Amino acid sequence: MSDVDERAEVAAALGPLAAHLSDGRVTDILVNGAAGVWVDRGGGVEPVESPLRDERTVRRLAVRLAGLAGQRLDDASPWVDGLLPGGIRLHAVLPPLVAGGAHVSLRVPRRAGPTLEDLRAWGALDAVALRVLEAVVAAKVSFVVSGGTGSGKTTVLAAMLARVPASERIAVVEDVRELRVDHPHVVHLQGRSNNVEGRGEVTLPTLVRQSLRMRPDRLVVGEVRGAEVRELLTALNTGHEGGCGTVHANAAADVVSRMEALGALAGLGPAAVHAQLASAIEVVLHVVRGRDGARRLAEVAVLEPVTGVVRSVPALLGAPGAWTAGPAWPRLARRAGLPDEPEGVWPGPGDEPEQVGHRPSPGNGQGRVPAQIPAQIPAHVPVIDAGGEVHVGASR
Image (cartoon, rainbow, N blue to C red; front, top):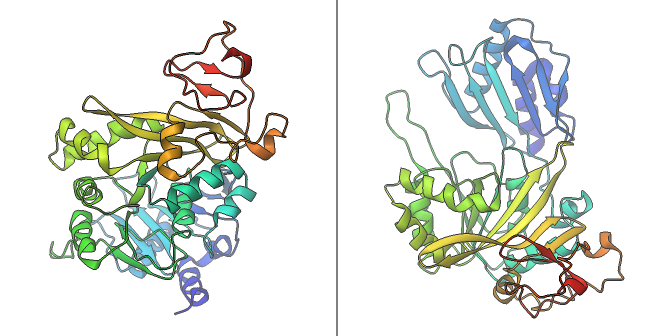
């Protein structure tokens, strides 16, 4: 079935809400019972006129969509997380788990996944960030994309995976298929819930183990959110370079504690998580969504082991067009094949900020060089020292 036919099938099930599916700008359709319908066109959610007048109508819609996803939704099984034709992700919940009638959330993928160049055109990246992300992929650096819900983690991950050489085999493991990777050799493995008899569940940890027997050049876990973290860290510690995934976190610095929490679900203590993490995941790419709905890369950090504990150290911090180099830049540069002196990333201080991602920052005014600043970073590049102070130019 073609993508057009799949969309038409979902449109028929959506009924009066189908018009929003045909709007290429819409990324989310949210039905809050009979109270209203909201959509996100890329600038944040906004209310739209709802044709769903009562709770009974909303429930019928939710059950119809669940059936289309091959899932059961009723009083005995009052929630569902599934995939509709065309890659549309469905989540639905029935009362009494939620008040005011059934609630339906649809995540609508773009018909063609955005490239890194698209992300740059939209302002999520600039030339600096684009080069860094390309280098991370080319050097087979293991990484996670962190961020909050709706921040664009999956979009950035898919765009990066599209840069993997065609000669490599990518194994993607997801609970619900959401990653749409423009690559000629991708194997998708998707989890499965229990059937009506309570049997047949296939979990992410099981899928990760199975994927390792499929000769992947790169292992991808679409979203690391449970016990599968144990299998992922083990795999990345056994020669599977370039592995990656996404994880929910409010900042790059929170990724380590998030991994600790997930490791606990798999029976791993903090010491075991740090021991595995130290050589499994090298880089964190943190994305955010602003109040205006715009998504952007906000930080590139390196996970560094220090006396048995892994910490997140900034290598690049700020925003497209306004980057600051952190103390982990030299390590990132060495690992990813970027310049130790990033003239190719930061052209000279006379260039336009929006072209080179360079932001002048106030110095400490004391005319000294902080001990934590690597000497090989040029004087015109802003640097964060270990204490969080920004230094640039004459202040160094």
